[in-house]
Image (cartoon, rainbow over all chains, first blue to last red):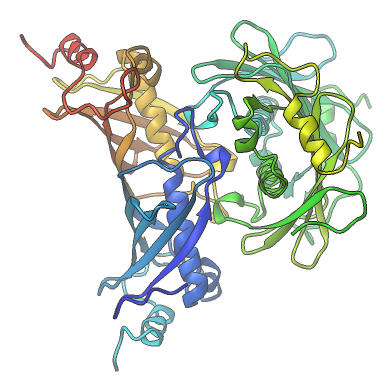
Length: 147
Length: 147
Length: 147
Length: 147
């Protein structure tokens, strides 16, 4: 579902923790949160029309250039976690998202951020130094650009 | 290293078990053995000139159409396993490999088999119903075809 | 949802293919189907009261001793696959499941089977050579034992 | 091998990129670098006597509470990457490591950092607010504590 905070473009989805995602300590291995961030970002993207497959259609890929996570509490097998993915607006030719992951008791267990750049797959595969048209259009559509 | 059994084309390599590959039971999650089979097959392929990247150069991909594994004993974090990859010759347009995985005490812990087919990536992406030339050449090179 | 075939104990669930589960050929890496089998088996288990966590409560683990898969068509990123997990009854001290995975056009893309044994986690961690009581009770509950 | 920079405690190891670690863009999926960091940290740990299994013997686990990565260039299937793991000393009850990953042309492709805390597994599983004795001993052994 879409979040209701005014002016914030976000999306909330749920993910069931898989057995294979937990480690000998009985908790989710920290690297798997990067996967949950991607699950959240893609759920956001499908809802808001800016997913990997949407970008691909416009001739762009958006590789991750930066990623970070902070872990406050563990998740365990059997948990169903809630991922909140929040779009962070920027003037740069970048896509920035923040993530908040909650356990079933609604406790914040993990936060994170990713930064993506635009690579033109139709052209030379070059890094785009300006915001591509399709992303400007998207910003306008979701109310982030006013003219 | 290459195995010495007469008439058998095989290869032996070692793989260190990763923490993330073990599960809450403290043992390697069974699905990860499919990865070890691929590690073995690619080590075989690099040694014998028939790896994924070699096949790609010839314009072919070889997707797995069948795979099986039997688990006799577990592997744990900290173990260094030995993978023996054995080429199984066939008249069909297929690549078949058998695998034997041993723990540090040289106990056989897992066996498996994979079957791959040839897909022509230069043409229509079609399944090759006959053995591609590059694979015939390879068979000849390793002594499996005599004329 | 539960399947309707008479006398068959099965369960149907859906899984959305993740980006990370696809490989440079653009298709799901074959080893990931083992994960989908587990997704199906655990969905079956949660529905029918025989999941990993249920077993754990009874003091048992059920490691996989055999697993096989056959691949007929690929799955791609963006697909939502349907997994049918079918319980295969046996007189042995084993849990056997068959799997059928369908793509969005309802085409059967993959079949598989897994065999699990019972290990007593409260006792010595020994392999159980007879069917544990909790599993007999479960068989009775789902109508597989008549007395 | 151990690095020679004066006063720096580090370790260098190599990792061969696996097919399954690359994505449909043909490059290593960003989340897998977290695995390479762990590969580097554990190689460091085995060399310097402070690995996961060493910590476990002392009754401690050291879960990751923070992790970050920056990606400058991609790695591809077939690459053999070099991981440099650098211990970052701190007065806090934490283990901090920095990572530098290089491709075969010795180009820096990724940097990262992880922060771990100490959890007493013998006691109540509590977070240790002071540096555990075993880690003080280790610091002394590697020359980081002088009295």
